[in-house]
Length: 88
Image (cartoon, rainbow, N blue to C red; front, side):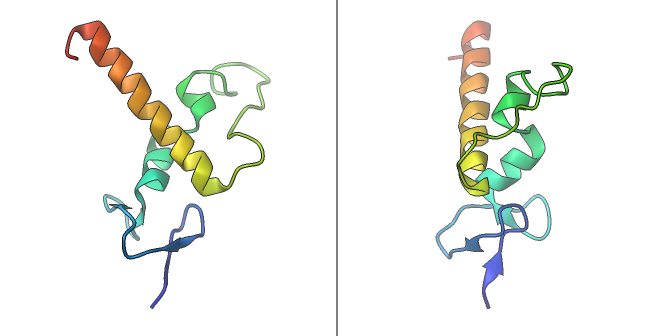
């Protein structure tokens, strides 16, 4: 039976890493995107932080690629924060 990620609506392959803290399972990067928000949100450039901003995900990329972008930003910001605290 084919499984579909509820976030990006792409097929979940047998070798895809899953985010299983929520049900049904999502691609790992899609789960991170759902929890942490878009790159614009994580960098405080979206409408949550900047009145009138329409920034969301990068234009022209798939929902899953935007989720990958958000996951990469999450890990980058986390690394920077740890470096500032002297944990890296």
